Each structure stands twice: as structure tokens, then as C-alpha cells.
Length: 283
Image (tube, rainbow, N blue to C red):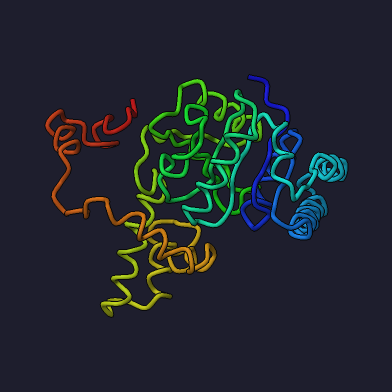
């Protein structure tokens, strides 16, 4: 499928960032929000972001102007009917997302690809009232979207291989690395791993084991992380944390029992770099 025009729903922090990333990658963008002023504010922030990158020598001034020219805005959702692909990036409220995809199912062409940027909500639930479920999937960008290279592609219960293939192609075209979450699990890949890490950091703090500063320092200097867990939570916004935890509650609690897959590798003599083989081969 030849994707040329991509709709982005939601002109907030993530939506604006996705619009910038997509337009910079060469696609035409229609940015939608319920008020035109939200879209115009987003476009001004995109221009400021691009201009700052140009001043730093990271992109050309021509690319700044070309990117802005590719972004059109609207407060009429029906205008997204011409899009080859739509990416939703509204607040993490299930009912809101469901209503959007229900309407998109009547607005968009039957061959359009519909994506949600949800970070924790079940993709299958988000798409439950859409008539085009086989062409729906999760396309989860990371903050800040123009900079972060990773995109998670999440299958719903109905997503086809062809849909996943198109989304991966688009991600590659805009300079992102796409990874596939093979079924719709809470937290997908990154947040399922991340929030287990964040929760343990919080327990260390709340149990009085260490200060937030020392925990952040431990992770940065001990594990070479670019920022600590508390710095990361502040950057993402603490208000999203309870919603993410609620979505992850149905997962089984991690135990300290050694996983069978690790035991199997040890039995096979695959001990990691020291033996030349572990999860990966090093010879």
C-alpha cells in the first residue's frame, strides 16, 4: 500500500510530536483536534522545535519550511477521510478512544490503516467498536516522538500481517525502529518491563532504603542509564502513572523464581559471553 497522507488525532504533546516526526519523514499530515486553536498552537511548537534543531545544525532550514508546509490542520474529523493512515494520540481514556475509532470506521476508506498511540490500554478494546478491525493496530511512539527512535507495533486480536507490514514500513521511512508485540498484552513490551523497574524503585524509596537522588544516581552510574527512574517519571508526567498501573494490574506479579528459559540455557552450557553463547551468539 502506498501511504502518502497520514492523519494525526490530538494536537497535544504526543500528537504534535508524531505529526512532526511523520512530516519530517516526508508524509503529508492532517492534524486534527476539537479546536483549531489547539492545532495552531501545536504547529507553532513544531516550528519552534524544528527551528531550534536547524540552529543547532541538525537539520537544514529548507527541511524546516518543507516540514511545516506538509502539515495541515482541521477541527473536522471527517477531513481525515482522505488519509491513507490515521494515528490517534488523545488522552488515555478508553471511552474516548473507542468513540473515535467507531467514527473513523465510517469516515475512512476501507483500505486505510488505523492506529492508536496508546501506551497501556488494550488495543483490542480501543478498536472494539470499529468496523475495520483487521486494519487496526497499535503504533506506540515514545516521548519525545521526533527524537526517540523506537516504535512499538501492537497486534490486536484481529490485526492482519499486511497491516503490521505497512506500519513497519511507515516507521522505517520516518527513521524509526519498529518492534512487534505479537499479541495484545498489558503494557506491551517496553512499559511491561519499565513499570516493573519503576515500581521497584518506588518500593526502595518508600521502604526507606535510599533517597530518590541516590536511586537515580545508582541507575545512571551503576547501569549506565541516561536518566534515573524518578527523573523519567517526572519527564513523562506523574499523572499518567496511576493509569498505567491500573492497566498493568491484570498481569501476574513477578516472582524471584528463576525462569525456565534461563535454566534451559544453563543446562545447554549457554552461559553468555563467557561461553560464547547465551541469548545471543558471540563467536
